[in-house]
Image (cartoon, rainbow, N blue to C red; front, side, top):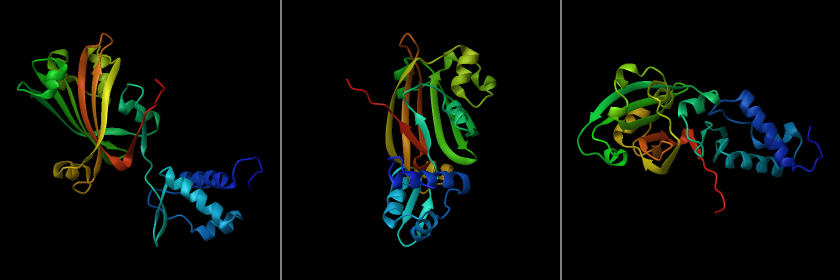
Length: 236
């Protein structure tokens, strides 16, 4: 089964187990014991343990003391180095992001997003999003209301960024984004179906046009166990 090609045996076993998990298992399923895997593949216990450790390090499985090794919910990977629609990115990964509820709020009083966008009146688009039928994120998108007249009557697709471009010719060229960990408030926890103070990933993004004009500000919280952010670092 395993070839002598210079690739460590534990890594080859890890790849076999990974394929089995993706083909045959679901999140929360219990994997065979280390002894069963050892016997099935004809490898040593040390090799099995190293393969399981690799899968655990990659967030594929989790070991629970006295209970065994379980398949974890695979996190959504988002490449933060390319500006674009989260909805479109997830569709490319064969996931379906849908809107469970939406509100439109006009803000004329003082607000930090008004300062960032340098406008008099904001339109806040407040959405509760579900991913593959599971509560996923709470999204607040702020934009100068004068740039998107009649948006609440016209918005009829899942991707807000695509709608901006198609309906108003608004395209984002670059953005500044801050990512931090936060504890879920009681209101957030209730909507997302998680315990109060459960971990969330909070993303605040200010998007600009090609001429460096601030166009939109978004404030998003996502369930931390369903999402991971990819950032590429380069030498200065």
